[in-house]
Picture 1 (cartoon, one colour):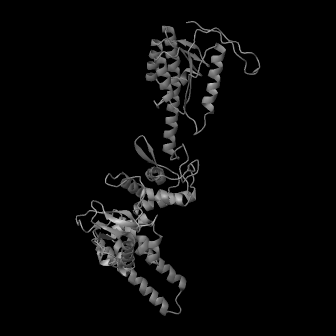
Picture 2 (spheres, rainbow, N blue to C red):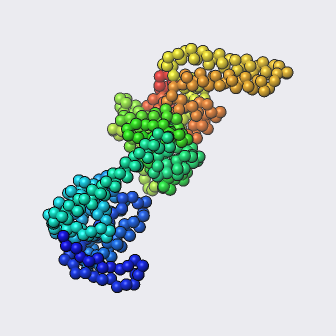
Picture 3 (cartoon, rainbow, N blue to C red):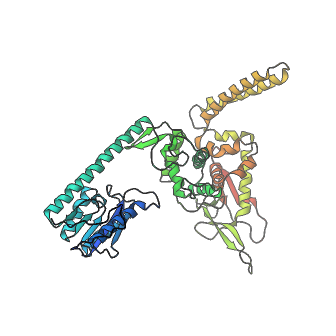
Length: 491
């Protein structure tokens, strides 16, 4: 195998003239690659490029724009390397007779790719020059043997490093330590502490999802409040989905197909995370990442003309002739044009129904799961505990010598028992959706404070809304044209 003199310029004497050698190569190409790099960081491949260009100049090898560079592309794990593929295509077209790389490991680092690459270079009589390493003439058996041996050393180093990393990861899992990698929204950089304001947003997202909110709606709400993700960018549908599917927030980490408990602070309990995961992965759930709904009843209210379960969608119509930019929002039948109703009076009618129903004294009963076993017995306990609280209050009011501290302590104990009984009776989904209004001092205000997603979930939980045709012409709105039928147990 023929070698040529390196010549060159000493690193500590940059002004020394570059010595060029006679070279048999006329169609040089360079290739640079670095496996891991931060976003926007190209310093590693730039340094490689400077070194390969210097070697090409020393050897008198023209590159003529044949420079190929993959940044943050791992060859070990078979990650797609578009520039490497372009380089191999140029080789097969006969446009390259030598490839200059910093080290042979920058070109190939797994056995399959190395074997394929060596065969391609052998067939097209292409050599390899290394800044840190030998010249490899792959047209000879000796050159291919040396390339294979050096490649095996590279592969050994990579596999050995991978084994160390896997062992370290297993140890971290066994010790319950947080995963490494990029910072997780809601946690500090090391993953051991909460970032309180971010953790609160994560918890709100879980609760909002289980209360009927959409991913698009949650993303829009965060962006409206200028809450940015961990990269300082606005939230998207997929980013919210990723947060809600992340087991880390429940104190778990995924390792080799199994979930393992961790010792870092949790943001939601495991049951909440699993319920969110089940909901998001439910194939029957509408998961379109498009814009959120704009009107209360879009896709919820039914067309009373079809009267077959067909729902309405929202649209608009232009204003009177001669006006510009004026439109009227409408609810229309999803399939035909036989129904078109203005949204505002219909929405107000439905809102009045919801507020009136959730303001009734028995509204708390809507949270009870009547089908659960033992509900009757639990209800009797709840009635007895509420009666005891009233009796205790009356006794305290009538006894001028009663101890206020004792009264408060006794009341708190009874209320804690009552809360436990009510929790056992609660219907999980209805409770999440309705509890904010049912338990509010001012249900009307609580309704107004809900996001549109949450309001829509409340309507779907309480009743079926059917829209009938309105009166012709300019006749006043008739509330009877909005048929509201309570769902079973919601009357």
